[in-house]
Length: 158
Image 1 (tube, rainbow, N blue to C red):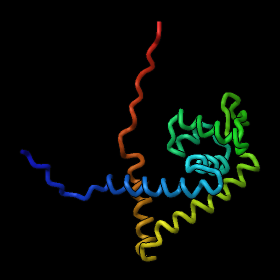
Image 2 (image 1 turned 45 degrees about the vertical axis):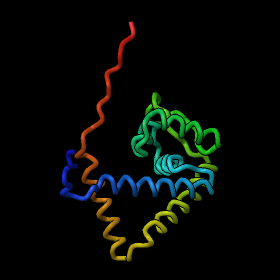
Image 3 (image 1 turned 180 degrees about the vertical axis):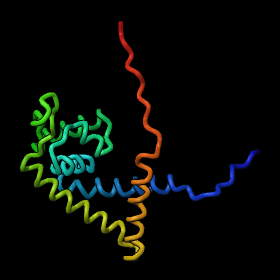
Image 4 (image 1 turned 60 degrees about the vertical axis):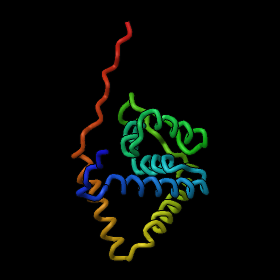
């Protein structure tokens, strides 16, 4: 029987994935209080920051096109957002947040902030600040460094 290779470094990917999954689950459970999901909250907040297209919002929220369409459809169904023509590009559609959507996003942000504070509460103050800065740096440093997703060429049906 062969043995597994020796690990020479801690499985950071596994740790980050596990922590991210646990925090996302906790966040989605808490956002139910205000009738939102983590994805809906993310899209609302980014759409409130400035005029953005659905494609731009999908990139910011790290959502694929299909998921993004479903999120925006649900936001429209709930009266939180509408698709409107862009003022700067008549071919593009922006996601405009309604007044009800703005209120939902504000309530959602209170929930998000509370969950994040609770999640980090077990760390001492000085460690918490260093951890958050290090995590942000890790994300920023690796955002452009990693390989890009490869898209398959569209097949032409004849």
